Length: 93
Image 1: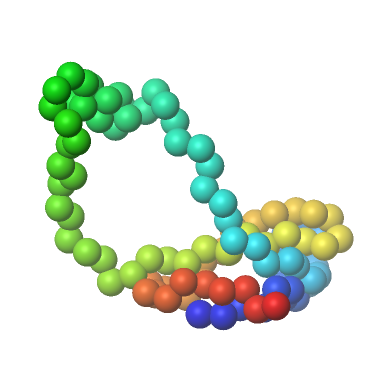
Image 2: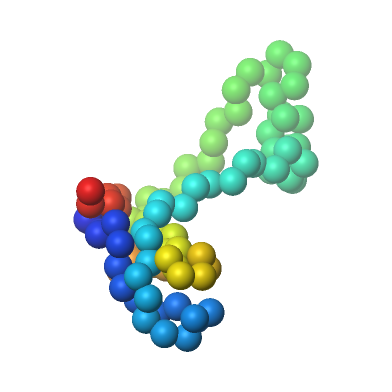
């Protein structure tokens, strides 16, 4: 799925339609003290080795997110593009 690098859309802070830059949202660092991380570290301690993951049913596709940044006020907002899609979002050059 291809999307333009710049689109004109509504900015809630400016309260009007303005040009927005389209970016891919980056994933933040993983929390080291989360319960799942602590459980995993406890399971792999010693001579056990790697932990087998639980098998979950596959979903049809992920909801694709983009980050829109207003060019006038620099306000950032995330937006879901379409429904579930197997295709990754590409930003046109």
